[in-house]
Image 1 (cartoon, rainbow, N blue to C red):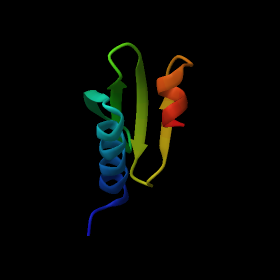
Image 2: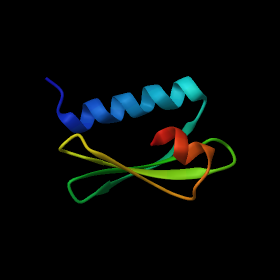
Image 3: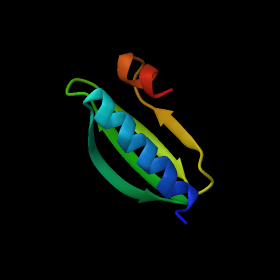
Length: 68
């Protein structure tokens, strides 16, 4: 059975595909993974945690708003 981090990452990847976004970077952070998403113009950071929670960060705009 996949852990909560894997499930959350899979959901984020599916959302990115649906919107035509790119997962530009991935790096491990304490207790999780940070993913940088771009729509070709803007970038947003999403921190995914082993608990299944996600924290969206970045400049206010359509990309970040869609991720919230």
